[in-house]
Image (cartoon, rainbow over all chains, first blue to last red; front, side, top):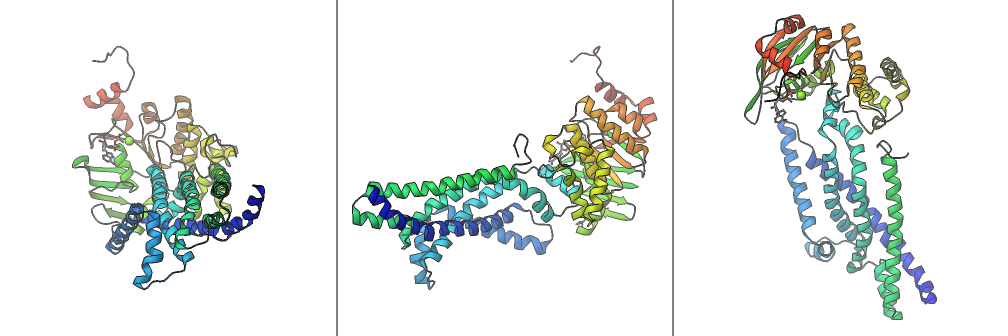
Length: 231
Length: 251
Ligand SMILES: Nc1ncnc2c1ncn2[C@@H]1O[C@H](COP(=O)(O)OP(=O)(O)O)[C@@H](O)[C@H]1O
Ligand SMILES: [Mg+2]
């Protein structure tokens, strides 16, 4: 048994470093950017100025549609449409790019709701205090509201990130040789499905455990100002 | 001087401010009294544009504003520059240290230098007896301390008027006294202030002018002497209603 583990481990770890982890990290960063933009578009009330208000409402409709679309359809189907479907509409993407697009859009849709709820959880009192001091909406967001929202959003965002790491296994279905796909290929040769799939599960668990530590570290850092937190 | 003329504010069709006209003189302490829900906060917040009345005008030395018209960013900036609000629950920014709570706005909004601003902030903190708390976070301080800091935060913007909405209602009597002493001090220094409070002793000894609001209307506008020594029937009821008197029984 140890022999099998030791011979297949390098191949699986290399697949993990080459595809699983980069896919997860790149998609999460892009997804997060998308999520913040989407959340702000939905959260901020446009000013009464018509030149700002109507374009903003159009943006908001687009944001609503985007979140609806990606939350209402399965991730696997989204990946299939992007990779197998789009070529017939003349858009050919490499498997890696297709996967990044699919994962980012999917993560962004869910995370935008996380961020929006974190923004809403900062009391109106904080806005009042900032406005009486003459902060603009942007300054209030940057200096007061976002720093407080980040703290609240961290645990659910960590959920999304950990979920994404595991969801990268779906990339195997669009021909990416990520770790799970590699474990399947090895199994086809050595007929050890229990061992190989358990090994894959173990490797996912290792990565997710490291992420959990990162989450705890970030939570401590962003909670310095909260009563009862040691920092 | 700040003057409001014919100010009307409705919420869901209900008039909360009913055609209010009132002046708040310079260099004086005006105390707004009245029962809960009478419109005191709405009135005070209208001065700082945290509430937008439906109609009426605000004039403030060289600025005048028609609430019914769209307000430009510049005008709203100029008005808020002349006023600073202190809230019932102080609303300090929990993510910033005490000194950052005081300095962030002068640095970001007024573009003051960091050094000068911090120096001033430390002076203000020592005036309210909290110099050694500069680097703490608000959550580590008592309510009374936080409220004193929020007064420093307001003062650091050098507003002409400080607007205080029940600044001591969330404090126990000992902490309340600490805050009231600071307000009395400011009042003696002729800082223009408008204070909503339920503390009659404070109103009596510190106010230069009393405005009594009930049900969205101003029922009294005059000197504390007249208010307390020649009260109308309604004011008598109000004053006795908020004084503990065990000869009166709940009906
Ligand atoms: N944002 C709001 N939406 C609806 N009604 C409000 C709002 N703010 C205040 N009111 C109502 O307006 C009236 C006056 O409120 P307020 O000015 O807060 O009174 P006070 O400060 O004297 O207690 C109350 O009846 C209150 O319920
Ligand atoms: Mg009130």
